[in-house]
Length: 362
Image (cartoon, rainbow, N blue to C red; front, side, top):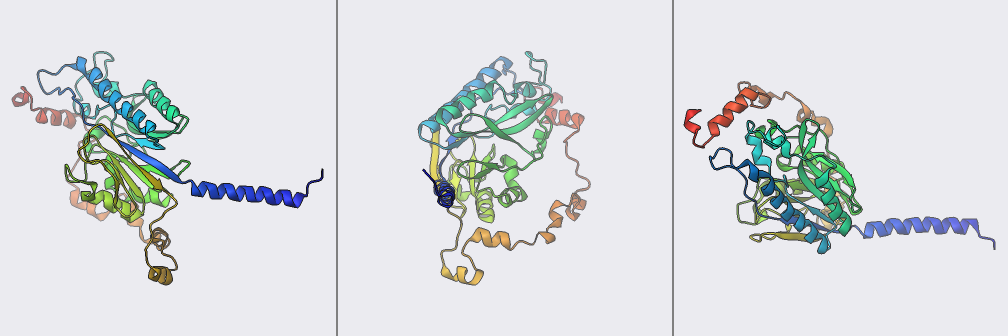
């Protein structure tokens, strides 16, 4: 049987076009965040603290979060995200002179986990079981360094990347090293990015992600931008970041509020204020973009696509000041020296904020 080569080529070409169209049409995904309460920790400024309780409390907290990951998978999530510091150990970074008897290291450092390692293996199994992406923010041990790392798992449970927090509060710099990359990760529904905690406060970071094509930015955090106990529609920074860059913003924090999804207009798509131990989820159609619902804009600008208009109107040649390491404003703060990199000042600071029984002696 003879086959017309031209017809065969046409069929192959059309098949490719159909595949592309199907891919575009299937850019819907169920995005989930877990909402869990904070858990007890030991306070080594107090006389009744017990270092033997640290690891059991850490595991209880972590197991609850992994239970909620599994619950998200049962609900059909395509991607689920946890809060910053899933081990619930960040506060131990203050006790820089408390030594772990098991390892002989500073307690905080001893609790960080290798990537890959036993903890990431557990998370990978959940991703693989439900064929969903997972973002799991943990403190990562890499040799002698500790990083605040969000580990990204694909649907098969493989580690497809990790975002190491690049800008960290002064206290965290005492024991945690900084990452140095803003990478966008391609999933089968949209390009995604991660801005951990304080990173969302720097407008340049979400903008870099948006310029690289990210459609959704996840913000695992220990901080809150909204009014306590109220909706995310009271979160000015998150709303601004969403609208400035025409991207979805997804904050995840411990507690019964502050978790959810904001769309590219800064509107709250999903949240569950006041509900503990729950999964918040919404279906997002990533073929949609931020547009003006008016033919006037399309006639005048040549498009009603807000994101396209903003990106094509940029004048980056005028933005050099953003990357200047010594902008004029720093002259105002010449006399201010952070405790970062100064162990003696760090120890003195710990002693001064020690509100335990020995506070008056320091």
